[in-house]
Length: 112
Image (cartoon, rainbow, N blue to C red; front, side):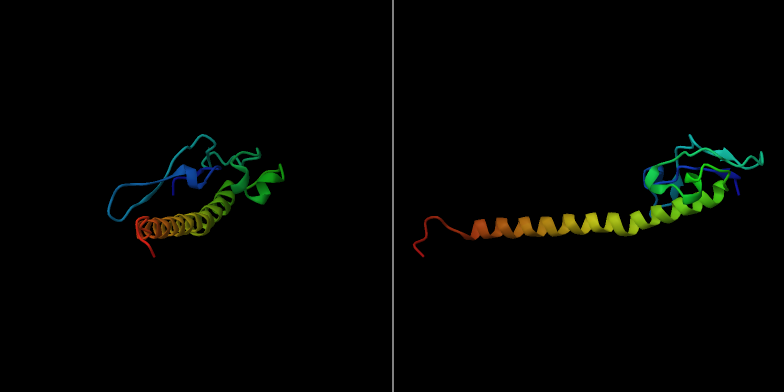
């Protein structure tokens, strides 16, 4: 497609546009490398949690394959971590609402 290896794909480097059916956009091309030059990357760059195993070998690697690995990690984070955080927030807000409801039900002037 665009013949660019991003080399630092992660959740923080993705954006959603404001459309009703949002499109995912990639940003921060600071570590990117053009594959048109037929130069295979060797340097260990990127965010540690998202780096493909072959990048850590400190030998020449295929940047596109490393980007696919990072996309997989990003998808995992989106599906598992973000979902877990949302569930925690929802449960916490429901618990707080229950505590508030109980406090409102208690009437300090009642003799019961």
